[in-house]
Amino acid sequence: MTAPILSLADRMADIRPFHVMELLRRARELEAQGRDIIHMEIGEPDFASPQPVIEAATRFLARGDVHYTPALGITPLREAIARFYQDRFGADVSPERIVVTPGASGALMLALAATTNPGDTWLLPDPTYPSNRHLVRAFEGVARAVPVSADSAYQPTVAAVEAAWQTTTRGLVVASPANPTGTLLDLTQIDALRRCVHARGGHLIVDEIYQGLTYGVEASTALERMDDVFVVNSFSKYFGMTGWRLGWLVAPEGYAREIERLAQHFFISASTIAQQAALAAFSPACLEILEARRQAFAERRNTLLPALRELGFTVAAEPQGAFYIYSDISALSDDSEALARRLIEEAGVAATPGIDFGDNRPQQHLRFAYTTGQHRLEEAVERIRRALV
Image (tube, rainbow, N blue to C red; front, side, top):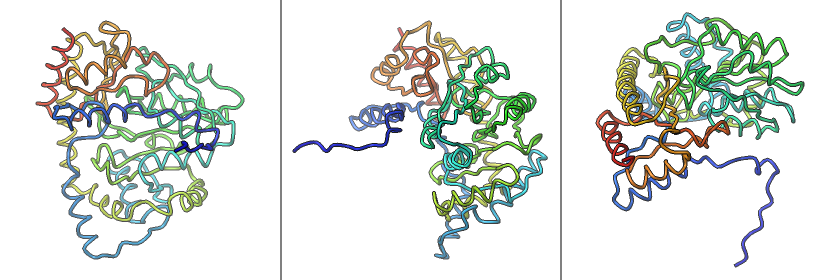
């Protein structure tokens, strides 16, 4: 049979595969063969959904009244998010500025769709989460990498943004805590970047989806100091609700009504069940569970970080958030993809090569996710030790 001829949009040529998913596919193949694989490649917490969230969803489902919600999300959830900002951070955020979305990806899609014209350039740090640049491309924008290094904690500086800015530049996307590096921007740094971007007529999007998962430093939000930036957040990471696919966007004043029109057409609404369940995520009982889990992540980080360094991995910018360690492998190999394949095939340990996160020396880096239990992390370290001999 003749293979079908695909007629694709030009943008598809610029959409790279998500390499970590190929690694996960190989891990599943090996597991099907009976191999034991320790997963340190996927950024998904190993904890089950918090029990208060499950119970809230169960109660709602039992009523059977599952219908569409308003495109911006149910009012009680938007109000609960606003109270969370006030109670935890002292940030005064109007519920009217909050848009509940299908995951944080939906939030970023809406922010970019509302602000990007064909040919507009968005500045993104390199390395960064890979989907960001592809979403820019999907809306006919151009993602321009701003190389960052351990010298600036893998975060963009005002000087770097000024040097990269062009007449076509529409804005800057930053993340704190960041994926893949786990590093932070403090509020003074974010404010300096905001002033730099706004002085040039641009937008600032702040990705805060790992907010709450910080170690040795208090969590914060850009909304404590500024209300003229787009802030993306999620129920997936700190709140442990990955499969529920729920996030939110806080838009500057005046943008929510325009974004609502996009949300109506893109999604109709976020999952009704997930929204009802998420109301319980802010309960005292649930927050107590989440803080205990944050402490568990801190203990895992404190185990894995020195162990990797002892094995010869270099971590020059110490991660203070999320659940990743972005390690320089130069002392061990000159090819992170080859090393990742070796670790999964020989040691049964899956880690993500730097190629997923950009073009800034990806062959020198591996990302390890400490999303598996303490005992498994210790076993992973021993397996890597044996594989590197």
